[in-house]
Amino acid sequence: DARVTQTPRHKVTEMGQEVTMRCQPILGHNTVFWYRQTMMQGLELLAYFRNRAPLDDSGMPKDRFSAEMPDATLATLKIQPSEPRDSAVYFCASGSYRGQETQYFGPGTRLLVL
Amino acid sequence: DQQVKQNSPSLSVQEGRISILNCDYTNSMFDYFLWYKKYPAEGPTFLISISSIKDKNEDGRFTVFLNKSAKHLSLHIVPSQPGDSAVYFCAAGSNDYKLSFGAGTTVTVRA
Image (cartoon, rainbow over all chains, first blue to last red):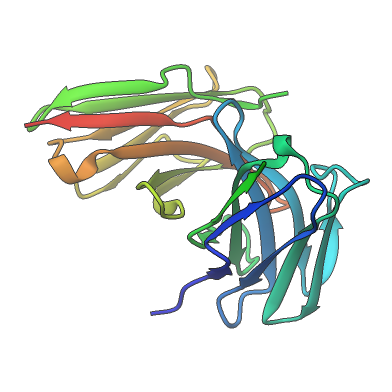
């Protein structure tokens, strides 16, 4: 049963600290997405990669957020420095780009910045 | 700028009755639409989709209807079951494979 995995599942940190979230996409999927869920905005796309290359990161605050794919089995999302307004659930999703394909979501990382 | 809108944040329905969830979009470039279901502390899971060349797609108890002229789609769940209680997200995509999501509708199925 192939699944997207995310670590950590929960993170509590203090304002100003660095936060790193990790995602292992489903083996064979060539597209990876990072989303943030907030009460007001629902699911917002932060960034996405195809074949490990960043395609769009326009949804991310550039000054503090960064997303990378060091290899095909790992995607990372970093926040440095973190702020209370970054508190949200962050989801990773993966898929195979063949047109009109669904995306498969991980369980999310619940982040609380105090 | 929300391109996909779910105007009803919540819906309560009695078990066995029909649940109707609505979704509106603004971008005419969207060419496929999906519904995702989300339980607490889990990620969204794919439920059903529809291409813009169709106006209806059915999968068991779930049917999605698309009205392109009105830029509106709806999800019908018949009959509703207690396990259907969840948050439902409407999403729309185009050829770049990015999805735009609505804010979600929380469905509660009453016994």
